Image 1 (cartoon, rainbow, N blue to C red):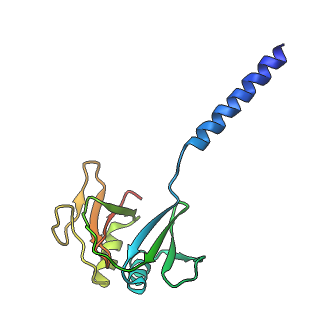
Image 2 (cartoon, rainbow, N blue to C red; image 1 turned 135 degrees about the horizontal axis):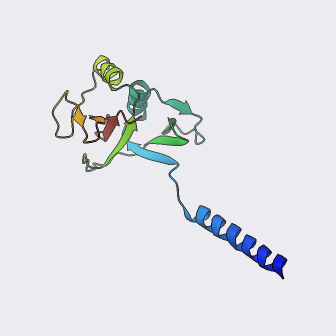
Length: 148
C-alpha cells in the first residue's frame, strides 16, 4: 500500500511538472515585414552585426539572424502596404557599451534620440539604464539600452 501511494504521488508530481512545463509558451523569433530585403539586411547587419543564419526558404525574400539568447529575427520582404508605425510598438536590443554603440551609429550616419524625440540625446530610466531609439529603413522603432 505504501508503495502504491508513493508511486501515485510520484506520477502526480511528474504529471504536474510536465503540465506546467508544457503550459508555458516562449518566444523563439521576431518577424519584421520589410519593403526591400537588401536595404534592411544591410541595416541590421551593419548596425547590430547579427550573425546571419541559414535560411531554409531560399527564396530571396527572407533573411534570418541570430539575435542572442536562443532567439532569431526574420526579416521578410513582401509587397509593401502602408503601415502605422508608433514608437510605443518597438523591439529592444541591449548592448554592453552604449558609448561604443553610439559611436558606431554616428559613423554609419544613423540618427538616434531619446524617448521624447530629441535627436542625439540619451534617455535615462529611473533605474539608471540608458536608452536610445533609432528607426530601421522601414521606419520601425528600435530601442537600444545598456541593460546588457
